[in-house]
Length: 155
Image 1 (cartoon, helix red, strand yellow):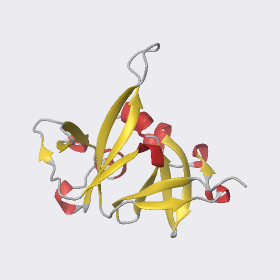
Image 2 (tube, helix red, strand yellow):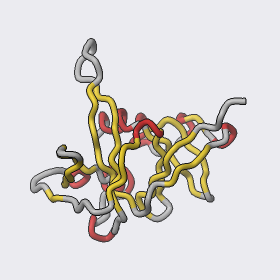
Image 3 (cartoon, helix red, strand yellow):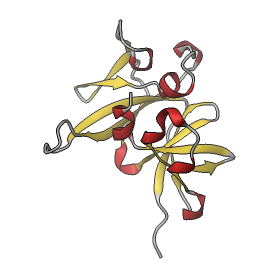
């Protein structure tokens, strides 16, 4: 019997959750306030420091779900640092990149039953469909499984 796939559930806002692969999760930061960067797009207007690296923070709500949302209206509990691969040229090896995602609750590890997962082509979120792998329901809330290497490419 194959083990059930595992993912991490990230709560971006009330009733807005995404899931990411275990391989993309690195560290959850509790005490790392964002540092605002002037003259940057609203969805990526701050950074944080993590292990001597500057990490951009991506506000997915602001970019893809609710652009009118004021950052200060959505308190968050911490920042999830994620890892993704970025390929700059066709023949070049992929390069490791990092991004921070503000989350409202600590990440939750979940196991997915194969019958819960839907193909990405059934999803309705057209604005970021190319970054979605699949979706499922968790606690009566739709959850999109996101590939951050694809998501960063469409922003």
